[in-house]
Length: 188
Image (cartoon, one colour):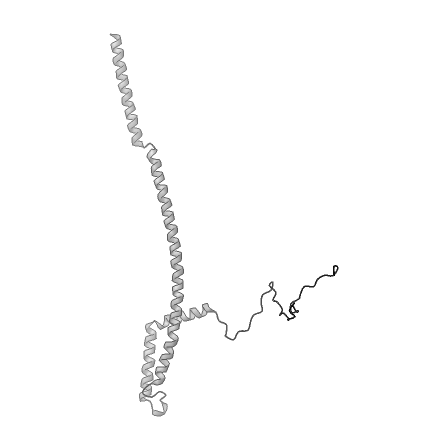
């Protein structure tokens, strides 16, 4: 036994309990696609289609066409020869068709609204982020302007320098006058 290698249980082999294990899928390979009972569809394409329908249902053109079809339906089923009428007076088939149209229109309109809500949510989030950045930039610029004003408060302006020079000139003139007066008194 010391020289023999221990065999690892293989997929599909029997375990300690004696039961046969099913083969394990390999993790380094993609799974084989499963067969589906329902047809596969692209949700984005279906969403765009539902938005187009919802957009059409909300137009005046749809209302005009719907009204014309209903008027033609009623007129045909009242005035056409008895053999050619397909929906007699209570117009049950017309009611069924309108109910069918409404039962499909409502979910399509809701789907289009949900997609619009998602787009609006993304747009609002981007606007909020942009506003936060703008506020941060504005606060930064405000701090910078305040720092510049404080720094300029310590910088000598042209008017201040002019007034200081004028004061110095007056002081020098006063000293000259005093020194002349002292020299005149000393000469006496």
